[in-house]
Image 1 (cartoon, rainbow, N blue to C red):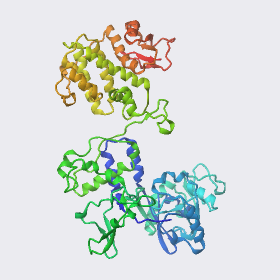
Image 2 (cartoon, rainbow, N blue to C red):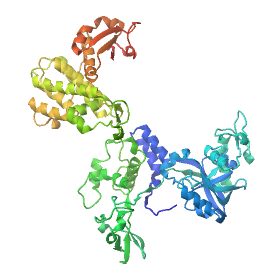
Image 3 (tube, rainbow, N blue to C red):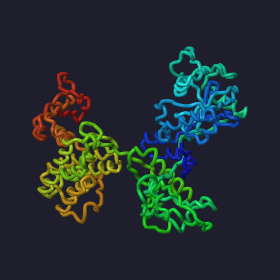
Image 4 (cartoon, rainbow, N blue to C red):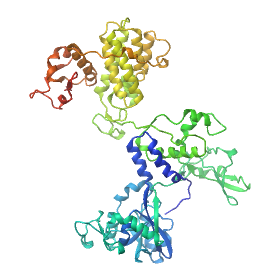
Amino acid sequence: MKHLKQWFFKITKYADELLKGHKNLDWPQKTIAMQKNWIGKSHGTEIYFNIGGKKWPIFTTRPDTIFGVTFMVVSAQHPKLMELVTKKQKKEVESFLKKLKSVSQKSIKELEELDKEGVFTGSYAINPVNSEKVPVYAGNFVVADYGSGMVMAVPAHDQRDFLFAKKYNIPIRIVIQPEDGEINAGKMSRAYTGDGELVSSGEFNGWNNRNAIDAITDWLKNKGIGKKVVNYKLRDWCLSRQRYWGTPIPIIYCNNCGTVPVPEKDLPVELPEKVNFGEGNPLLTNNSWINVKCPKCGKDAKRETDTMDTFVNSSWYFLRYCDPKNDKEIFSKQKAKYWMPIDLYIGGAEHSCMHLIYHRFYTMFLHDLKLIDFKEPTPRLFHQGMINAENGEKMSKSKGNVIEPLETIAKYGADTTRFFLMSVASPDKGFNWSEAGINGSLKFIKRIISFYKNVKIGKTSEELENKLHKTIKQVSKEIENVYGYRDATIRLRELFNEMEKEKSVGKDALEIFLKLLHPFCPHITEELWEKIGGRGFVSLAKWPEADEKKLRQKKVTKEDLNEKIIQKLAPLVEKFSEKEKIYIYAIPFEIKEINAEKISKAVGKKVEVYATNDSSKYDPENKSKKARSGMPGIYLE
């Protein structure tokens, strides 16, 4: 197995700071949990086993099982593996390594699913608590860069170790007996991983195993054969890549001076244009680029041909945006202080444990260099939802169910597409594509265009003024909230429904509606703004402010209740235009106030009205339970 010399960022130095920083982040809790698991801070015990006269530290979170160790497993990738292999076992170990698929940090989650395989190294370890000799195996299920790269195996109380022991006929020793029974090593079909009373554990016999963890650790410490430690799953960030398109690592190798950094005056190191692509690293094919003089002694030397992981650039580029033309420093401290940190970061959850950790680390590192005055680059994070095909399947080219955005825009228009996407679900929620839904949005956009084409500009009624300023307040709040875009589109539909009923509308009200609609439909609002004589561009106009004096509650009358139902139904009917019938479920004392004929005429669908306590009502989805005073339950079929 080949071990490469590579370059790393010592991100592990920031493990605790990365964990502590979570408390200041307005992030999805699932993402924070994923990062905490990836960093993987664990408190445990380091126990010293003797192998071939040398002390090997072994990390474990279960020192209570130390008396049950019957073998050890070292990672097949461990750099000192061959030091443990005897001459007699060398051929067998080498044969095992050739067929072994490498296990990297990225596949830690897959370890439990691996078929546990190993080979005896020929060496034995001395268990420090009882001086027993236990065989040392090389295995495929131990990660080289976690803990010490070797584990003490307790097959009676660890399922992974149990499977391995059964496969290679290794003894199984029980050291924890459950309180409600007794298990027998010879009859075990799987490991016992529960708690209980310690047995075969020397002076700790009779202890509850959980209570014994700290006591055994202290006992090991007093004997000089162990100590409390903190361990992490997080590994240092390997940034070396053997490929052309990365940023060159600015290092020169000299036989006389060793590893020498490229002088600052010679930075940046630029990639050569003349390279041959084929097998291996293309940079190795350009000798004139590789061969240079040592900056220290002037003798012949060679460049580092590894390039940086592209995550390196994406971990700090947002800071360069603050000062992109600066050719004297990384960026101006004053400009970075003015613009940063990022107000809102929108990105997929798939980057939770790579980029979203790396850019936090990089920012903390730049803070320690005193280049910036903050430690967290993204105090607020938002994950967008996924759009599935109409039948609920994930979109993929292989299934032929991908909705092509450009085709959709060509068919329905950019504003229709935008409005539909923001009205169909909260931005953080996934949803299924709907042709009926986008057609409903198209009808709404066409209604707006037609209305502004034919509207009589006059005076705005008191009722519309009231609705207008309520909508300003609601939409402003919902846009700021990010998660409220869908609710904002509902408010806009309701406001427009009111506007359509008016014989005339004031120019101010017409302008305000376009301002509110503009973030969702930027193209038609600019056109309609010009049509009604708006000054300049609507995109540059001042955002409207709600007039508290015009915000008053209207008393609900019988006529109002029907109007409220119509307003509620209008956007639903547009969105679900294929539905043919509407069922309305009213609270019993309001049933007489509802005019089914009027509602049916207004929305163009057949309407049936039921009292919520009517036992014979048709209500397949229990919508009657949602009925409340002033707003019945509604079901479309």
